[in-house]
Image (cartoon, rainbow, N blue to C red):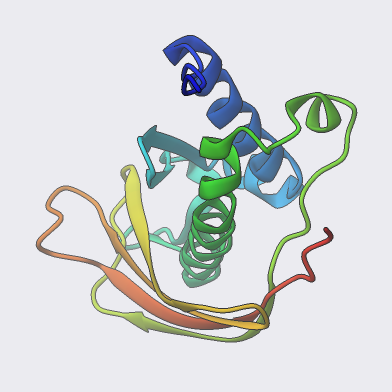
Length: 169
């Protein structure tokens, strides 16, 4: 019996982009902050482009702590959701047509989220990556790190715990 041929690269990329687009568009605040995601395989980097509205202290100037915290939490939730969906996407079980029709996967709910502000966020683009420490059926733990010019010098980091949505099927 012959093995099934894998999907062409373009089909796989479309499936991945549709899944990520669905996750990001399901949270309007992501659009308000202007956060984007750069996808390289299964790794996501969140990008918060600099905007004047993100400044909290115009004297320094420094990014607002609330904008920084929201950026980290968004990165954690989307990163966690992406890690859960990755296997479905790769197996071809992700229904891109349902996403196009408005059916979006449910997102994890925050149980708690702790932010460590390590230094002032400067008035420039910020980047963040989430690392899923544990992800089970009901609970997940995620660590996030944000930097600007040098990844080795983060300006904020966070740890969050999330209630995972029930998976239908």
